[in-house]
Image (cartoon, rainbow, N blue to C red):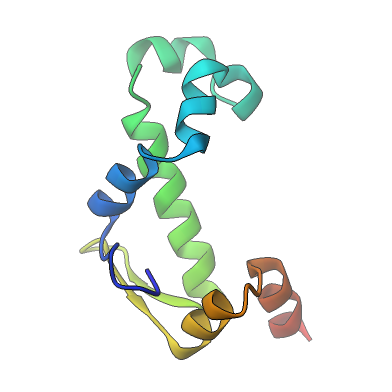
Length: 100
């Protein structure tokens, strides 16, 4: 999102399919909290990936690291998010800082 290569939920779901996380989720879905019935109904895990992207988008929006317009599915980077990305500052650190 910070680089501008992922701008919406659809692109994020597709991008996740290129990651090692996706390979591991397909190889061992139970280890990632995906029950067998869900995996049988959605072997490509597209719905699960979409849920994961939307949930993460909400969290990052709440932490003001991105702007997530859930109605349209579009993401926009914020200054805080770009700074965190460039300096490898994790979401947990931002979340703790905002809570204080």
